[in-house]
Length: 317
Image (tube, rainbow, N blue to C red):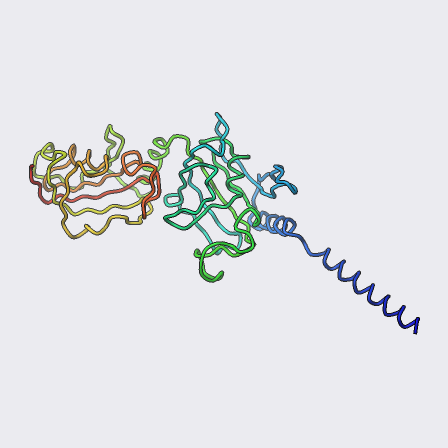
């Protein structure tokens, strides 16, 4: 009987040992993320990435980064107000947000991970750490690979099935991000407008001294100075972001009346200085002459805008 009990205990002990060994062979989350990042780097032929050695309490962050351009000056603090554009892709490729026209953030660096009240989206904590610890300066850009535990964790982010494309980031997905922290918004907007003109092979646009670009698509029949800030203008018009997303298209075919003084600065100035009855005019407006840093329902903060106006009638006050 003693022999049988001893034999049973040996078998049980061996079983427990096997279980422990099997458990120890399972990677923890840090190891899991590291394996995924290394596989991603290899599969995509990425070069020039550096492991972040910043300590996060239980080790290093596990992020890998590549500085594309780095400016100098005062290092960024969490209390600093910043404007940035970004792209984001999950490692499985099922979530891709690559549009830097719509992917804007403006606010305190320390609030970067807060939920955007207009879109419901929030940026991952790893990006906040990377900007603060690695990128450090306004006017700089980087690409960073963020482990899932500094991304959206085990639960992921978004709505719908994980099989859907661009609606949900699956759990335990590491992230590939590009970020550019803007130093001078006016200079950045100017380059955005120039890039847009070049990419679309546009011609005929002239830069007004105020800072916007305009093109007279069809000249008017009246005098250029006949529109004042209080003139009632009858027009059809459209407003778009430079990615082609319309934010004001309801008056594209239905005439509406407006007065320049009630419009954003870029439109008000362009209509008064370059338009008359019968004019068709296209305007590319930097954010400082548009809605500025404040985001609206369909307009991110610091957005360059495109307006097209066809003026059919004017009435003097």
